[in-house]
Amino acid sequence: ITGELHQVERKSLQAALERQVRGTFFTVDLAALQRTAKRYPWVAQVSVTRQWPDAVNVRIREKQALARWQGNGLVSEHGAVFRPRSATGVDALPLLSGPRAQSHFVLQRYQAMAAVLARVGLRINSLTLTERMSWELTLNDGVTVLVDSQDSLAKLARFTVLYERQLAGEMMSIARVDLRYRNGVAIGWRQAR
Image (cartoon, rainbow, N blue to C red):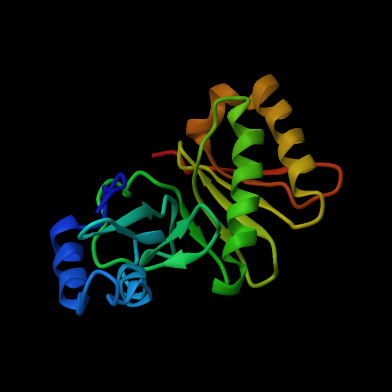
């Protein structure tokens, strides 16, 4: 087995593949080996070839998780949701939510919105596509940002200008920013303690 494996357990995969090997060098079922490896949730691509005189090479490419999905899954670099039994190092990934059929769209929107907000040093901790097709973002400082689907990136860009000019020093006092308005924003302040 070759390939950079961080999430797939090499020993478990090796044992599963060895159980599938039957016959001689020429009759071993390479397609069966490929199907077995593809059953592992972290496996993105598998290449199985014969190596003369007596070996079979299995090359694995793992999926790259770009985000967590609704608390019980992960989103791959292609926007597909997958649910592995175990995953290490994914707790810091952003949390995305929405209809499962929209996971690719939610990932694309996350990437575009994150790029806009990164210009001013803001990071998205979570992004939800609501039933009304609007967006709810939670930023790294705990502020919730609401934006509708119409001109969402332009509205976020307008917010970054407001952030730089007036809100950067006030973010710890802000609970919510509503960008769903055509020509303005609404700010909800945190309660004084």
